Length: 274
Image 1 (cartoon, rainbow, N blue to C red):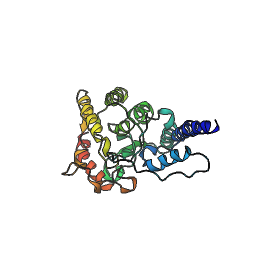
Image 2 (cartoon, rainbow, N blue to C red):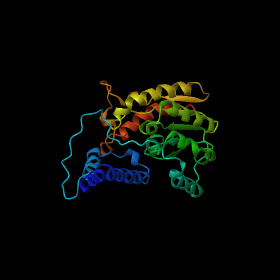
Image 3 (cartoon, rainbow, N blue to C red):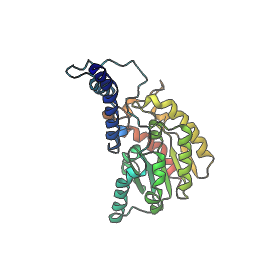
Image 4 (spheres, rainbow, N blue to C red):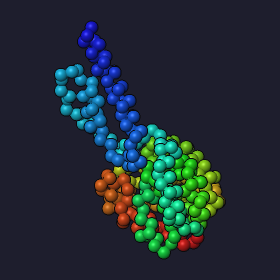
């Protein structure tokens, strides 16, 4: 009887506790967690070890079968506005001491915006960067009244949607969130930058490509919306992401200076029209 109870406890109760605990940690990760590599073998070893009877050593981890390359861990849902309030409050507090220029080009979106050195690539143009890493389209939309409307921008550039795909949102929901953004944003022109491919999330590229097609169609139906393809330039002749355009330190998730230079070359002529 004792052996039976021990088996049930090891096989069911301990793994369940490990799962619940891991989810509680997941909720408290910093804003760029979704951009961090996921060590699947380590996680699997933890769960295997937790299920061992007392006094026995955990077995060596078994290699997982080969799968489509996508080493970045994904989440099941976007974090929601409450997660970002500290960052948004930081933006508005900074505005009080250093008010940004009016009639500037406002850049919104996730970490690909946050990490973009706008002054380096658009030095003769007033710009404002209000990207917050790891965010989804709906979260940028939620805070428009705080990080867009007060600045009275002449134009908005948006890069968002990549994390939505990584979080598992259906393409239909991503498009709906984009259309909600368009309804809530200030009545100024918008340039939407297509979801980019990357070595780190290459396994998600088919869904990203589908989302791009749908987002381009939605943008085309709306006044003052321009869809800019910034994806094709990042792919080589073999159809794969060009590794020299990405940061190797994060597994090839974010662009490096050379990659941003290509984006700036595509975007600058459009900005000059406004």
